[in-house]
Amino acid sequence: MNPVKVLIVDDSALMRSLIGKIIETSEDLSVADKAMNGRFALQKLSHAEPDVIVLDIEMPEMNGIEFLRERKKLALDIPVVVLSSIAREGARVTMECLELGASDFVTKPSGSDSADLHTVARQLVELLTGFGRQYQRDKKTGRAKKIPRDKLAAYGADYLPASPRRESDRETISPETLATFQRERTTIGDRNAREIRKPVAVAEKPKPERSPGKIEIIAIGISTGGPSALRDIFSRIDPDLPQPIVVVQHMPAGFTEEFANSLDRICPLEVKEAADGDLVKPGRILIAPGNRHLEVIRKPLATIARITDEPPQNGHRPSVDVLFESVAREFTNRALGIIMTGMGRDGAVKIRELYKQGSRTIGQDEATSVVYGMPKVAWELGGIMEQVALGDMAAAINKYAFEFRP
Image (tube, rainbow, N blue to C red; front, side, top):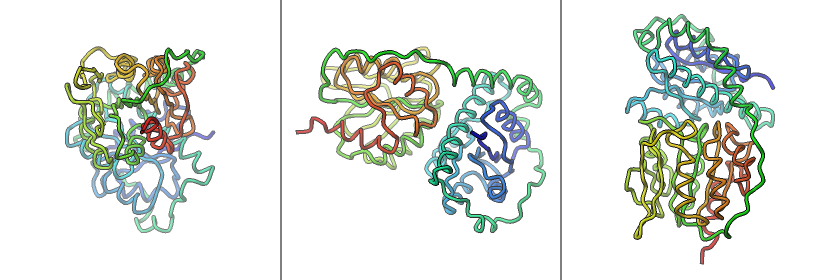
C-alpha cells in the first residue's frame, strides 16, 4: 500500500519542520505538503490530496477551529489530527475540535524534553498512520467523498508564503533539540516498527468457570482513535440502559474532564470524569481521569469508583487492565467487558480473566480499528467472545444490556 500522505498545518516554521521529520520516521507516512494556516491548507487540498491532516489550533487568519468549520461546511471527510496544548483552555478548545469532526488529538512537546518529544512522535505516527490508512481504504471502496475542487477555488491561489518567525517557535522546541531528534529519528522509527509487528502468542480460550449472569456493569477500554469512537457509541446508546458504564480512555491529564463534558452533551446518559467515591450507578458513565487509575469497589449499599496513583501498568495510567481486574474481582460473571482500538496490549490479559469468570466480552474488529493492537492481542489470548465493528458497537451494547430484561 502507498504511504499515507500527510498535510501539515501549523504557523510555526519550526513546528512544521519538526512534524515533517517525525513523519519521516515511518515508512508508512510521507509529507504531502505544508501550510501556515487553515486558509492555505484549504488552498492546497486539491493538489496535495492528503490522506490525513495534522492541524495546529492557534494560527493567524484561519485557526484550527475555523478550518474545521470550513471542512464541515465543505463536507470534507479527510481525517484531522489536532495538535493541542495541555492548558485548561486548550483542553476545552481541543474538545470543541472533536465536536467539529476532528478524529483525535496529540499534545505538543513541552519544551526541549527529549523523552517527551519521543512520546509525542510515537503517538503522532500512530494516529496519522491509523486514520490515514482508514481513509485510503474508504477511497478504494468509494466511501470517501471527493474533494470539491470548485468550492475550494474560492479560498484563493495555491501558494505558501514564507512565515515570519514567532517567539513561540523558540519556546516550543529549541533548534538543538530538533537537530538531536533528526539524528535519532531512525531509532524511533525502528522502535515503532518493532512495536507494531511484535508477535503475539496465540492461546486457547479459557473455559469459563460459571455461566454468564445478568449484566450489572459495562467496562470499556480504549486508546488510539478512542475519542471519535466513543462519540459514535455514546450518541447512540439506549437512554434506558440499566447498567453503569466505566471507561478507561488513554488520555493525558487535563483533558479528561473536558472530554467527559463533551460526551455528556451528545449522550442520553450522564457522562462525567470519575472522582474518588463516585457512585457507579445506572444512567451514569464514568471516564477515568488522566494519569490516574480507575477501579470499582462493591460496598454493601452501592458500588463506588476508586481513583489511585499506583504505578502505571503496561506503560499506562490509567490502565485498562487495572479497571478490568477490579471488574472481574467484584462482578465475576455479571459484567460486559469491551476492548477497542489502540496500540499495544493494555487490557488484553484482564479481559481474558473477565471471560474466564463467565462475563461476556467484546473486541472491536480489525476493519474499523484505527490501530488493531489491544483488541487483536485480546482476541489472540482467547479473551474475546465476539468481534464487533464500530458501527455496530452501540447496538451490541444495547442488546447485551437488555438480555435478561423481564
